[in-house]
Length: 433
Ligand SMILES: *Cc1c(COP(=O)(O)O)cnc(C)c1O
Image 1 (spheres, rainbow, N blue to C red):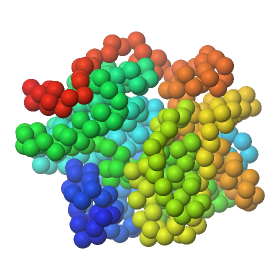
Image 2: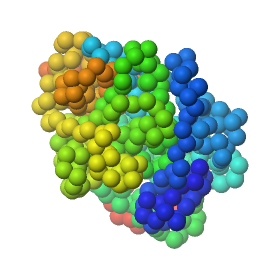
Image 3: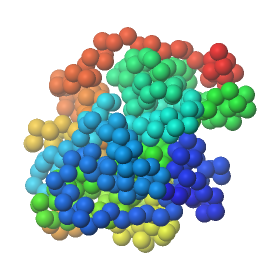
């Protein structure tokens, strides 16, 4: 796989370079130079394949120039011991549950595959890697779980003190081993600034192989395409064109869906659904991209005013707005609508959705009502509702709901975190010591 920078098509990298650098030196994004198609045979028999079989086939199509088949199999099987089931909710409306991984959010797919791929490259090159991640919640948990006990890699997670939920904090601070948590006396932006500065510091970069695990890394994008294929496999027998509604923030999830589509997955249409941070629905409507500061909502993992994967999304369509619009529609909903949907679907169907998932549900309903075509609608559930109990309580008037053992056990564990100021010198001393 050859990748190029969205800012300069001449600036190229191979897979290994793109995975360890995350970003090209000109601060563009890595894009595959060529997107291969999956075989028609694969699509014809896809309903008989497991998640890992599908992940293997899609990976092989993308990565066969870089990695042998046997190694791709090993990388896939080490990454995934969980599935992405589709469950029916209402007539023609299905939910793709992406929360069956270790941190109970869809970011597990990206983080686990990235860890597995990095560790494959490391074993061959004997490098030691130190990963630095700033998190506002979900990313940190998925990355911590993804890299826990991976040999040759240590992980330092920076999170803003008092600004992540109890469950999220426990996910970051209770693993131990090669995962260390720094509780920063500041905001998420402060955490991110510390990480950015570390990558620019000569002394640190000389002493360590620093790597980032952020969401624009190509090795997080690739595995997110697998579950679109897996979803298609499960609804194919219904015989109707398929529409996906994706709850969107930084657009990594949607971009991965477009990657699957460009590889030949039969998808009728995508819906990108946001909360009040609606720059992407506005762009789809007007053709004008107008990034703004983010605003706080109940679906806070989607509070993004300038999505980092926006450039990737448009590049898939040659940066032509008309082309993007052919395949992607955008809708947005406010917090009251989101909570009402959580309550409504729970009362009618007995199915409880996290706030992000509820936003995707609303976008799908809106699209299906507008088009009036016979379609199979699939909305993506990006996290388990129990990670957002405060919002569940606001929506239902009570949080007296079942909490999966994996999360309730966490709450009894003891947090281990090192307090950290927002001064770079303190962070640097910590890293050097
Ligand atoms: C990260 C996240 C999103 C947004 O996904 P993007 O790929 O950034 O668009 C949606 N829901 C949840 C629960 C998340 O953690």
